[in-house]
Length: 185
Picture: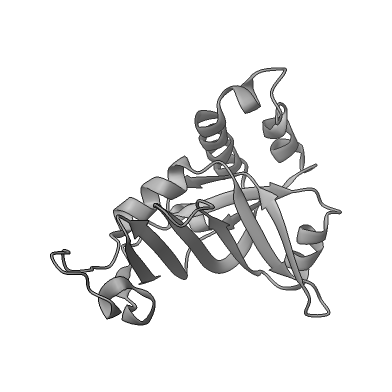
């Protein structure tokens, strides 16, 4: 199970082809790879992710999800009859993407790996706690958008998946400097 693995520290590599390293500016600091700790903080804080899965016929399916980073994996859920559940039952490879929708500043992150269904009750409780801590009133309050999600996880009316990164990409922008970092786990 992904939760039992200790979080791994990835190697980071700057891809100069897509970074400002190809177009240095006078007086600008050297362009370096984004530190994984910065990316992980953004994964922990991001509220919306885009899940990309592959249909059995090879077509892509992309949809927004909420996810919580815990113990070195991103945890997300879906209904058993939803398209992403059917896709993941056929092929567990997927990506979760988060970031900003502007060119000015920010860090867009793509996490790739194989989603594994979580069924261990103790792990599900940790995942529920991680979601409740992160999303607060959205989950805890009876008026919250996702109120009752914990019970859905417990009863199986929502399937929980863990995505431990195999490869991740970060596309950073700050003060006109662009970076493209690849993290390999």
